Amino acid sequence: MLIIGNGEEKLKDKMLKVLKENGIDYHFPGFIKHSKLPEYYSQSKILLLPTSGDCWGVVINEAFVSGVPIVTTDMTAAAGELVLDGKNGYVLPMDSELWAEKIPGLLKNTEELEAFSQFARETVKNYNFKKAAQGIIDAIEYLK
Image 1: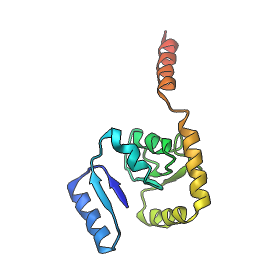
Image 2: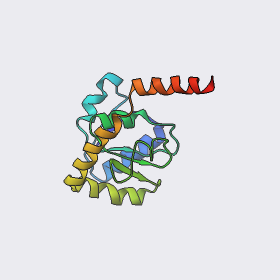
Image 3: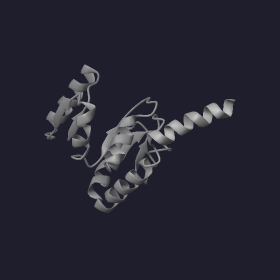
Image 4: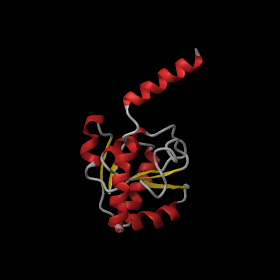
């Protein structure tokens, strides 16, 4: 398991304790500079983004560019728009038992994993700087 990023110290300690108790092999480099993230995405099969509130989660875009499917909650704004449940990842409620059921199935099903990966790359192509800038221009034009 590769765990990147930093968070609440109590939660991090609890997570690491569970991993150690269960004999799970993990690497936890902590915060990674943005320029180094593609190296880490390329080592990953899926990205888990358990969030209880995220405006968008640019990490989703970044992972999709690398063809890494996402498992996240319906509490991120990207759910249903960028992360399409059952097509390029899963959008699940914040329920650890459901996550524990779904994730191993995806990892074991190489055909589904590859299909999610391909669709992730295709989906993210529609989210780029040029289209974002055009959206702002269109909004301004609309208000004139």
